[in-house]
Image (cartoon, rainbow, N blue to C red; front, top):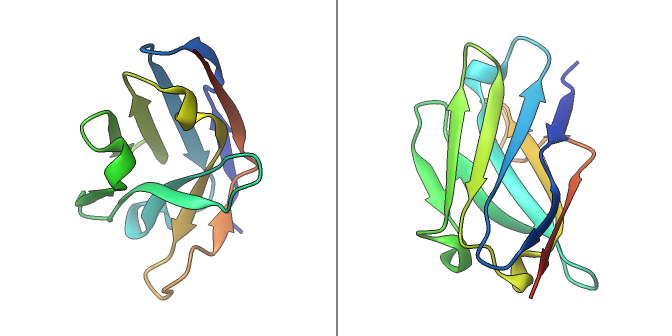
Length: 118
């Protein structure tokens, strides 16, 4: 069984930075893709960034050049460094895990709130 626990959310002013962390339990982390998603109030959840087991990254256009996803397989942890935050980045951020045998994000964390004030 895989469990994902996010941390690092909070309140920050526009232009500020936050780093989110997601620690995974279980033995499949290093073999899995990891993602960060967010859901703003009244909007659908969207993929912000993901990283493959080999370290290839992908970003939503809205966060390119501001956010960086990374992973530490030794710690079973994925990070999202968020710089130059904007009010529209406000939302609940979720990490997710996609095993090698799946095309879906099979596992989700409980979410962490990020609020960016103008």
